[in-house]
Structures are given as C-alpha cells and as structure tokens.
Image 1 (cartoon, rainbow, N blue to C red):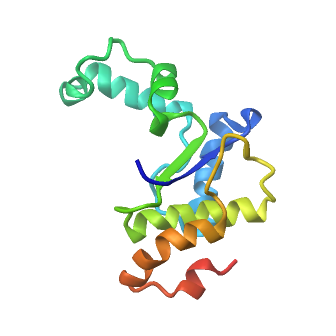
Image 2 (cartoon, one colour):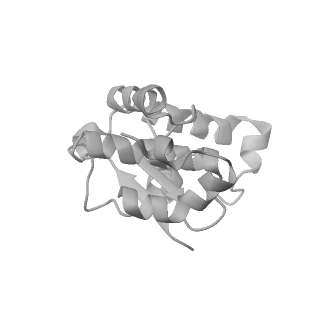
Length: 150
C-alpha cells in the first residue's frame, strides 16, 4: 500500500465553485501542475459519462453496475472522492506529480488548515511530504530551497 498524503476539504467547502477556484489557485499561486487536485462534482460527472457512454470507458471496471454515477465513484473509489486530494508519497511519485503535493502543503500552511477536515486528512505536513519526495525533486534537478519557499 505505502504512505499517502490525503487531504479532505471540510464539508462546506466540497462544492464545485470552491473546488474549481482552489484548483486554479493551487496552479497559479503555488506552482501545482494543471491537472485536477481536488475532485469537483462536475469532473466526477464527466468521468461517469465517460464510463457509461464511451467505448473505452465502458471497458473500465467491467463488473461495475451501470449507469455509474458521480456519487458512486466518490463513495467507492478513494481517488474519486469529492473534495479530496491524494498522492502516494512512498515510491513511484514523479517530481512533477510531487509539485501538486508541495502546492497543497503551502496552501494548507497559508490558510492555517481552516478549509480542511483534519480528522479525514493525514501526512499533509511539509516535513512528511519533504521526507518522501525531496529525493525525486533532487533527481529531477529542482532547487529544494526555491521549491519549498513560502
């Protein structure tokens, strides 16, 4: 299994408007990559549509009862949970993927964790994330002081 960084937004912050703005902020202000960080319902709906209607999508999880709903994806697949960010820290994470974790760490620090559900989140502190990902950053040629600078 390994160690994961898991961050769940508080229930009142798990709406598409907040999440879409947060994902943009993570990219524009904290250096995250352009992919989705926290899952909004609108993107879970797109994933459900793909799994229900697309030829390739129908091949995914062939034993899954159709039609697939965003709620089903969010409830049954941790990587699809609404308002949730997760990244594997122990092994296999690339430096580019790790930049998302750094961005989320910086955002949590800047906002004093006020938007996250700390009971449903773990391994999101800068020390833990750096311990697991700094070697990947160094191999990729990143300047660690610049990367982690607030």
